[in-house]
Amino acid sequence: MGVTISHDEWKARAAALKINGQAFVGGKHYAAQSGETFDCINPATGEVLTQVTACGQADIDHAVQVARAAFNDGRWSRMLPKKRKKILIRFAELMEKHGEELALLETLDMGKPIGDSTTVDIPLSVEAIAWFGEAIDKVNDEVAPTMPNALSLITREPVGVVAAIVPWNFPLMMACWKLGPALATGNSVILKPAEQSPLTALRIAELAAEAGLPDGVLNVLPGFGSTAGKALGLHMDVDMIAFTGSGEVGKLLLQYSGQSNMKRVALECGGKSPHIVMGDCPDLDRAAKSAAFGIFFNQGEVCTAGSRLLVQESIKDELLEKVVDWGKKLQPGDPLNPSTQMGAIVEERQMDKILSYIDIGQQEGAQLKLGGNRALTETGGYYVEPTIFDSVNNKMRIAQEEIFGPVLSTITFKTPEEAVAIGNDTIYGLAAAVWTRDIDVAHRTAAALRAGSVWVNTYDAGDISLPFGGYKQSGFGRDKSLHAIDKYTELKATWFQLS
Ligand code: NAD
Image 1 (cartoon, rainbow, N blue to C red):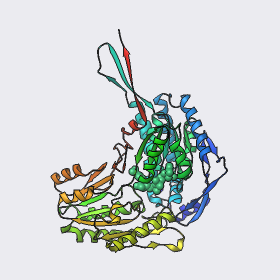
Image 2: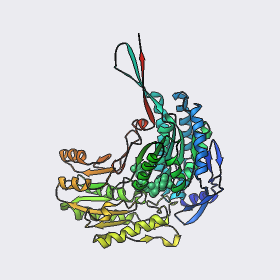
Image 3: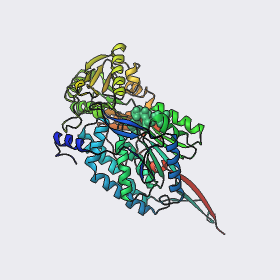
């Protein structure tokens, strides 16, 4: 997808693109009852792309009623799994067919390089829908070994009305990691995309309807977190919140659940992942490239970003020089240029936050080795240079707080035990990596790191068949893999007494 399309061709397609920014409820486009809309901005230029429906309380109430009615009458929740499978696979195929359009929308909306949208975001989103569709008629329920004159069934049932609230860094992929298992298991879904990046979610709602997903089963309601998101969190008739985003909002959602109907909440939140390189690293060049891509991929707006580079003292200078060389090559550029590897930051506010953390790092005494500035200001867009700090102490704010931008903190250690202690000295526990040629050290370190994903001699490797999620304040519940099915189903025990 997209490999042969030139920069000029992408620009021409962007200029010709027709975007529908309306919400999607009950199988059709929907305008907010208040009539309100908000500006959807292209972060590469600062220009308005289109107007998007700003859903509020009344719209959420309406969508929940629509989703509940669809759930209760069984049009999807009681459809045979093999029929749901067919519709989801058709949905995935339509997403693939419109993959270049979806990639363009994603790049225009949040600033990521078009090369990443076409090769990472869209294919992995398609895969998530197809994979859970394929899986759902192959998952059996259970019979418990109770007693000879009883038949005891353990069955899974859909939770009901699921609200999926997602962030802006991988807008479609985060949505599809939730839609795949939530829809496959028979739930009705209300998807609230982030206000910075609603466009692909709105487009796939049309494609789902075209694929034959019954009306009311997938509703997309764009809007602000403090209005639409909060209304979902507090709603008495929403059964579950599936959330990806910041820990701050994750904690609010737990409170909303307690203040309302005790709805199930699953949280995928932030990270401050340690990328540990031991002195006996088997391949310093590969480790350096991994360290650079681990923090600069997607402009550093990645929950699993390897934002803390922990290096054994003996190899620090050599490794850091190589990482800096990579950083110099990964300068930001126009996201629509297929050769760009680092695009624009999602919005001005996020850019300002990143720049303020770079100031904080310098005030804290860390040594700036590369970058540190806004870039390409003349475009009107929001770009930040790849930035690398040396001499960081793990107590500094730049080592403890999630910056969510292209800023790497380098910390040295003396022993593998110290690396683990520093690696775990964070409120987060999303991901970690260790590079070593010693299998004992690799195994011991991987086991001791308190994180949901650990990589050995690589970074950010993943597959839809592996669960993804965090320990500690990185959240709970897992996306991806068959384990995600647990998240979207209730377990029922039914006892048949036999004579
Ligand atoms: P955010 O928490 O600000 O927003 C996420 C979503 O929550 C958006 O849709 C937003 O509108 C909504 N929201 C905001 N306030 C709300 C409220 N009061 N009630 C209900 N909903 C509300 O996060 P963000 O800035 O969009 O995304 C960045 C964060 O997401 C980072 O912390 C990042 O680590 C995290 N993230 C985590 C994962 C993961 O899988 N663990 C993946 C991607 C991003």
